[in-house]
Image 1: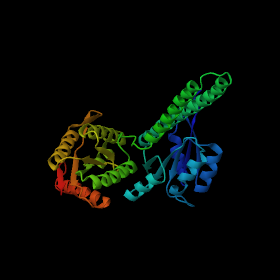
Image 2: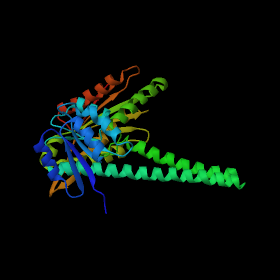
Image 3: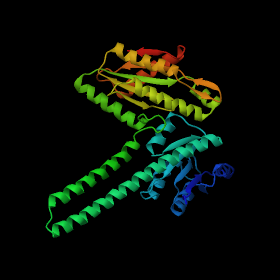
Image 4: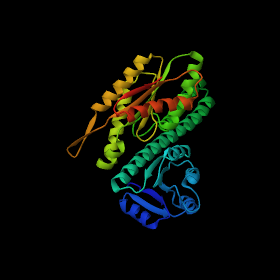
Length: 344
């Protein structure tokens, strides 16, 4: 018998909570809380697997209790999906910083809700599997330690026992590293998530300061992406984002770094090349994105991209560099879209 996943919905609007509970099928057990304090008490009581958490609550902001909810899980995986009727760049950066796993904008329909719920369930099951494997290897290490004592008592070869224990220790460290890697990448596109991308850009700028190697930034914004979501649904939009992620991986070189900068924005770091080559890569990305499409109920849905390119100048502040790349992208968008603009 498959255990039900426990879902906690935190929102002071009872009608909204009831509508979300109606979207859940028999595979889920739902609970509700109308405030931050009640949510923390309920989490201790029912131990939820997935939490849909409204950002604006009567006693605290959802941001403030994200970490407390994770802590209440006591090492057990828990997915937290923040909810709000409004969202901007500042909200997105804070959502990432407080450790939330996803965000859904209210109001949402049943299809979008199930998409987010399914993605949370996949991440949850992946974490649970890794934890089970980690516990298995910990048990194996303990068994090997016990065996080594017996071998020592019986005057067997000590090196053979220690070698066996070390192999199991390496396996445990490998599983721990898998958990770490999973937290660095955007689930939908497979690219670096924003926090990891930001750290990588900072590191590369520090590196080129010492080596005086050329470095270019590329900002990519998908044209009219919101209208595609509105017209064809978020499932179609998410599939296009997944395909764009594949395009960026295929068009960049080994040693370059690509990440999801925002909802439909992407950023790429190119190293050690000339301006003409950087522009060739940007143009190849633009034309390849222009060629992708998916079928939505018999309608072919495609996407184009406005792309900005800029070169990093030694001594330039990281924020100024990113702003320069972003400015080039906006010039491409304001001058007709589906083009590449270079900002020296």
